[in-house]
Image (cartoon, rainbow, N blue to C red; front, side, top):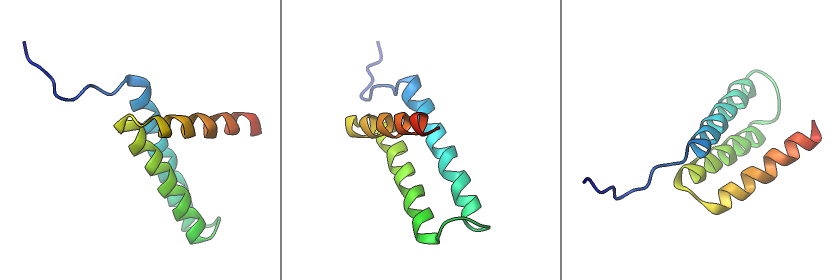
Length: 77
């Protein structure tokens, strides 16, 4: 039997990380044509990338903030 030193990332966490990465690319591409200031856009993109990285690493804090941001997004829309 082969032992794994690392546990596998759950599929929902991997899917949420991919969605966050795609969501980070879209504002980054639109930031250079029109939209918010460069500093605001880069801050948002870096926060999304940090959340995606935290989700891939299995951070409970990243799961909490992803839940908060997604709930706020659903409520505001």
